[in-house]
Length: 114
Image 1 (cartoon, rainbow, N blue to C red):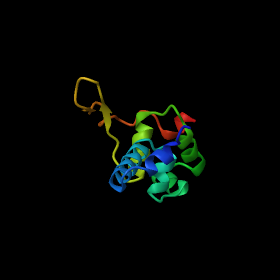
Image 2 (image 1 turned 90 degrees about the horizontal axis):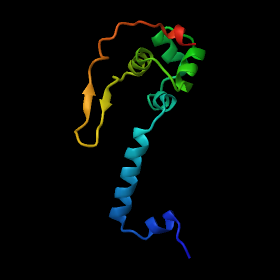
Image 3 (image 1 turned 180 degrees about the vertical axis):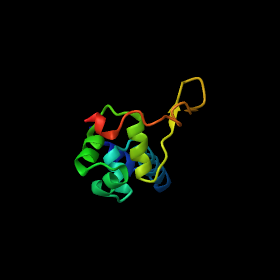
């Protein structure tokens, strides 16, 4: 009879279970959506909109978008108090930061994306 993953993990040592839990949290943290970032920063969509000078509906639209301008993404992250970094990873090299976009002029306004 096959065991579930939970049953398998339950039979591991406490140390191994803690290690698995920590790695699980790390992996989940790497895969957050913009909405989840906004929630963990404890900022309402209205407050983010105030910082970005857009309405709450536009913030919601940004959070649901799967295709977003870099300037919009950077502005959103900065509104939450963060900094956007773009990292490229190749299998045969260490991760590299791309700095080409760090000084972009604001070419498109947030309202142009709607």
